[in-house]
Image: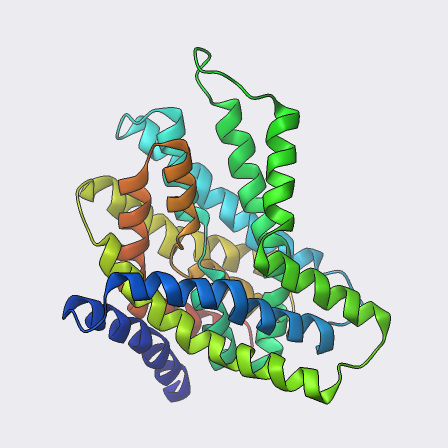
Length: 316
């Protein structure tokens, strides 16, 4: 338990240091954007490439892991969507954006360091199985739903155009490229030359601390604004409903202890920046998604410890 709390304090401590650096004016907010671009565009893709290319995943397809995690995603997303519509009177597209914020975990910036710190390389390898399909599923489904909910009086580009645009953006995403190259290298059977691995290790090892510090700088930019009632509901769904759903489903599927713990951890991680980016693209729900990201990250310092403690005692 001591090591678990130490990991939580270290991970969120780096985020807090980034936030403090921006709050005091020691670093400009533009630095956070540059560091985030490095982490997401270079460091984390290298880390995922190294894991996919060299790790031992086992022979079975991780259907139970995927079913557990993504079922919890859609439960939180759906409950948040109908809550925003019924209780707060938001339109379909705004409610969809807010629901996405309740179901989209920050697996890259927070999930990777937490899984490494709490469960080691084996835990990170398990989390990588979720990450490998997380972005295509979440982004693709989000774009599809928003296009279907586009008001009739607005121009529709056509589903084929939307899917082609999504495919181009997905294939040019650095995270996806890192995973794909790792898979190609893995199936080729060719060992990574030691000289090349030194470059990969240098970038991969820098990814986690840079990503966490950059996240803190970014949180200062988003801050906390209005919509407190809806945001608190979205945060509650993200930090309590989603991990609770993952825990129950993992029990029902009789998942192996480590996979179940990683699934609960992934579900308990606070919201990331992607819902805000989607909200910005479609011009609705920007305040909801940005405030949910900021507040869920702050509360997650406590709630993450709670869910890790619960999972540790339930899955033994």
